[in-house]
Amino acid sequence: MKYLADLRANIERIIKEHNAYFIGEDIQEPYGGAFKVTKGLSDKYPANIIGTPMCEQGFTGLGVGMALYGCYVSVEIMFGDFITLAADQMVNHAAKFSELYKQDIHFVLRCPSGAYRGYGATHSQSLEKMFMGIPGIQVVAPSIAYSPGEVLQTSIESGVPTLFVENKLDYPRELLMDRGSFWIKKVMTTLKGFPIIKIQPVDDAPELALITYGGLSEMALKAMEKLLYEDEINIEIIIPTLISDVESIVSAVDSGPVCILEEGVSSFGWGSEIGFAIQERYGNKVFRLGARDSFIPAAQSAELEILPGLEELVNTIKVGIGL
Image: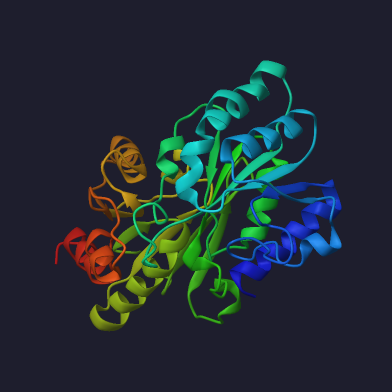
């Protein structure tokens, strides 16, 4: 099954089980959302799929208020870049309500994010690090390594306001469980019920652990294959889904060097916090790879100079293990 189909199927399941509401711009028929995640669902569930005007702060606030009232609600931001417009509702309202009113807030803000498509500076960013470390908000990033729809259901059922980061490149991709690969896959579950996926090509002690999330899981898998076939280097990939849970990610790491890969700008980033926590606990050598300190150009040739690439990742890993 493809990522998009899995997500859509589980949205329908969430509606059936919780009478949940899905809110956003143009998510009803005939458009079905910018990336067609809700395509066809408004015909089946017209009261649950709610289209809105172009006002991210307004319809995010509507969703948060409905969740405060006891509803299960997911709001879709058309492009993740526009979460800046909804930040006040998330940081100053959603994040505070659970503790203030001593109740669960079943609210998810879905954000299609990421680059590598030539969409330019304001439709290509990965801004999720802005919400890391905000008490009362969890940041979740599904990937091809595990059912994104199940992760969405875990998020909305958790009762914690969630920023749900979907990478745009993942929508047409086949899920890893359906590819029939020979990779060894282990799934750990955090105390909050979110999976951490560990993947290796062979069942030997890895020479390095590569930690990443979301859409760059595909690049990590290609790097793992390339290193194995061309250099006989065995690495382990660690793919968390609850990416704001530093403790669970650090606990999944063993001894040896670590490379942390992220699509967002690496300075002051997710990799900085995870890398420091790993060094603080284990003393491992840690390498980071992310986007350069620049906005993302529209020309794809220029875009690729800013974003992390496969060859750069492979070379970083080789340096990490001393080659």
